[in-house]
Image 1 (spheres, rainbow, N blue to C red):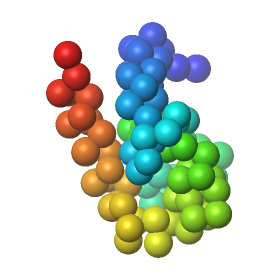
Image 2: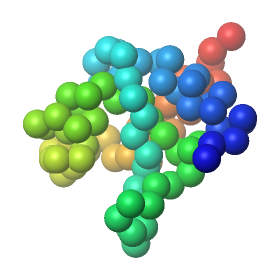
Image 3: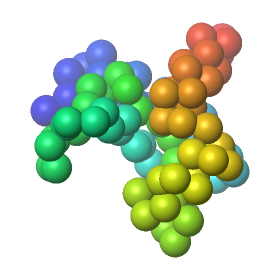
Image 4: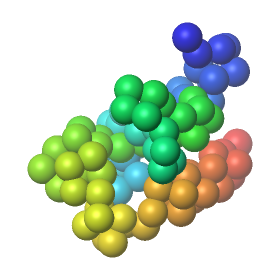
Length: 89
């Protein structure tokens, strides 16, 4: 269960729109090597992705290698998302 602070952060991230195309977004939790299936990372380590870029045919979940080749690694995207959040009024 997310804390109040986590929910506020996740709402702000989702409000940015998809990192790739700016369409309405859901949240992708950054996954680190060794993190078991069914276990997500911190609710503060999320990036906004639309369905197509999150779970669609050429998404981070189904084609991570090409996704990261085209748009950057999860860590790079997270860094950019956090920068964008810090620039919000």
